Length: 426
Image (cartoon, rainbow, N blue to C red; front, side, top):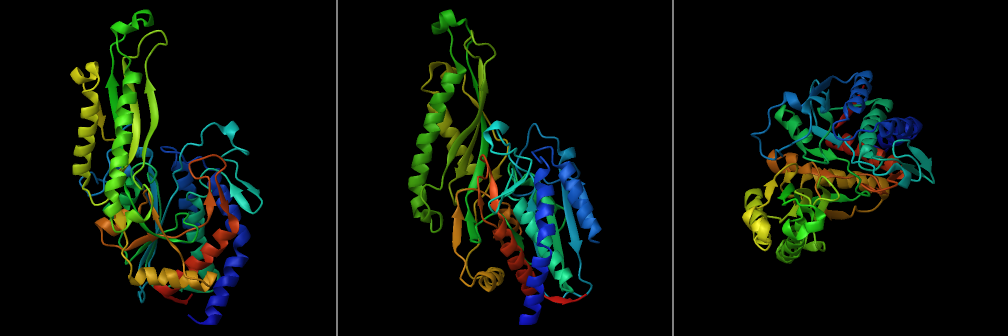
């Protein structure tokens, strides 16, 4: 790439910057919680169409993928409302390498709104940051990948190879949105997902498993509670057993070539609990929704079997549960770990773009959580990594993204696309 071309791209990013911030604010204002993403996705589809991009808008209910590796089971979610959007920028005579740019628009619940400094879905710019649920994770990346392509067009350039721009749902719960794009046949030479990585190369992510413990009890009036059992209190014993198992898993992971580099990568979280029907009755039921990282290198089936054994052993310590064992429901993430091994041409191109913008070699990170990269890289041999903006508060209160980091990300993505896909004059 000549210095003249680079200068034109940088000038285009700067010229479009005010529009990009406004676009991101509109995106963050959509309360795109699970099952409520359709209005956001329909707006994105209209924005893609306005740019002249052919759009494939479909729902997860239209795609058969339960037989595919990486599929996660669901419950209590209406997939007829789970809208996915793919724009295809096809080069008539491809000269470079093809690319998938993918971002998720689903966001996690905001919690009590009064605990936010400003309302979670009223994007607020303050001290160089944009606050709002999803501003960092990862609507920042969605804006950057769209406006990176806008910058090329404003500079009088177009990609010389095919690019698929994907906005998906379910990233925060199953990953089935990403899987659906592959089931639908979209393929490329690489996939970049601009999750907020603080301009680091995200090389590896652990696997993640969701499950629900369904625990039963014997209800009686509290005045004679000794005659009954309390399902909520029984849940504590199972949770403590799983916490102990987590500590043991973190000892075992210390021999892993990648995940041993971060402390305690296996995290366990009992994230949601409900139970009982009446304050003066011992509860007859308790459901605990849990998330745990999968031991790297272990198959999902083997991990489920081992986890079931831990729950069963703990239940045998409870006289009632020993005779009425809890049920385990696998509902949500059933995700393998993923590592992009060093040395790929794709990673080299991303690194070159980072160096061009920042003047330094990018740092790397390994995440004790999950991204959609695994679908493309692990199951379909499409090298994939995440590289994105800087922010904080994801999944917490006062989530925010550093706006300047989005501007530099947009430039880095533009330069990467120009290098990886090639460009030609419009």
